[in-house]
Length: 164
Length: 166
Image (tube, each protein chain N blue to C red):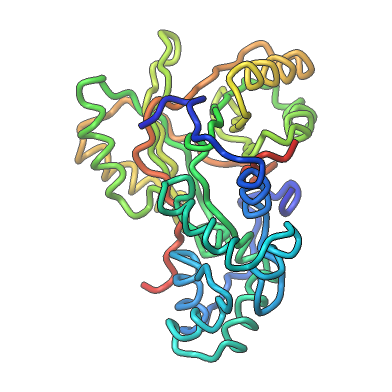
């Protein structure tokens, strides 16, 4: 994985396209034609660019983003785990294998805050989430963790790239 | 901001989805066709007409089930740096601090969570110095003393698909 700050070279045009596509697709039967018109491009040129972003890995996918909670997943928790460095890869693999885990990241660890692995867990209830945590704990032997249930959502958006 | 300050525990009528809606939700999430007539392609995959696919997707967008249709980019490949930030905020100040944090366009997620560190937000900026500057400004303006900054070193899973078909 590339270190942060080491992005690929993007032209002004690429930045405009990425900015537009990190927003929402317009209404209508030919939304890409509409976007192309907004950006002053031909539709074919835009479609080729977007396919290119997918092929080079700049874009992971193009698709719909669904509200988790509206899909019947009313409860969610961020779970912070303490995992020894030499076990991170194996443990993270088990965690990532669980369908209820949407994100699994390794993050900086501090002496006063020893949690280094963070998983986002979704369930229909708190109990559902806790069962997943228990399953992961049993399979990985990691017993040092904190379950941080969501109390209130103040903001949830996608990054709008190159907007300034 | 989507949906304002919503309590997660709030009872909401459970959503019901028809088999066709489920199919379209899964297909549109996995890969929305990047072509001239995407709804025709989507309909072909789900077994319905272009018009039906369009109408159902529009309805799901209006109901707030689909938040956005667009590119999911690799922030790293685009040169962005991001961080999870945890703040320990006195309970009576949570809303006020959350409001200040929300003002920043680089902040994409902001949640009150259980635990001593009770406000957690993610922020992405175009460079490390810009990220540091914005986080310092947020800390200064909110006057929160206990803050943990948690940049990611490895991303093992970044899932974005919510399965609808069992």
